[in-house]
Length: 384
Image (cartoon, rainbow, N blue to C red; front, side, top):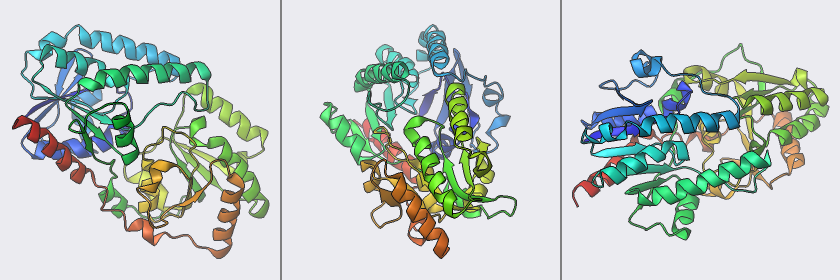
């Protein structure tokens, strides 16, 4: 198959790594993959190595997109307009498949137009989350995000295959009149081979780890409240935060950390990838992921932590129930940071820093298996 991937607004190389694991399997099946960005087509390496991909000229030239949410929306619009002006030239290349790696609007627009120009092309979209209007955060940004999501939802109705990463999202699509023939259930995956290679390092001093966007919906302020309680018992307790947020949110959050006098108890690690990321996981004693968001469909960082064997703490979101059926994660009612803190104190007093049930999930969620499910669905349409 000749496949083109729609990636107009990619700006963080690390975000690509999970997708590259999956696309490597696509290539192993004797398919060619191109990426469409900035009005140009870039060919991926014959066989992708997720951690040496930067030698490809496409990845070397990735620009840094704006870090504020409103600026990024404008940037996204400009990038898509640039792609649209060249879309007819792309259509002449006789691609069999066009891929939208996520259902966010900026990854959907050009694929939708290409489908209009060439109706016989197979369009696949990965549906990995919904965007509720009621989540916490800036109300204007939240309203715009919801509005763009609803536009995207309308556009992807024309997709041939919508890969939904959870049962909850499958149900959402059915409720919104997507056909059962159109929706294919998959999951997200983890970098299981890297997790197996990772080792505990002496240079890290981490009691609790959070990995994800620094965003209100991820429960970042509840973590501070829980930390204040834990610190009363363990004054030198260290919470490490691995991830970034937009400039305004990070500034506000660090101001709150200072206000609560928690500077000596929190480490900001920034954005990490590869083996270093999982070495940090395995050098931590437990994992906190207190997301409150209705848009949380999978919680990849939570699954990675669990597979690393960390005791994990999370709020009781519906999307987790189909993944963690054997108490691999300790769950609490949304907002009950007091119970989270008390349970953390309990496991530290008993020194119970292991999660054998969680480690047993490591080979269940591989990108290779997911790629095979997706390829089978695409091939079934080719035979029709």
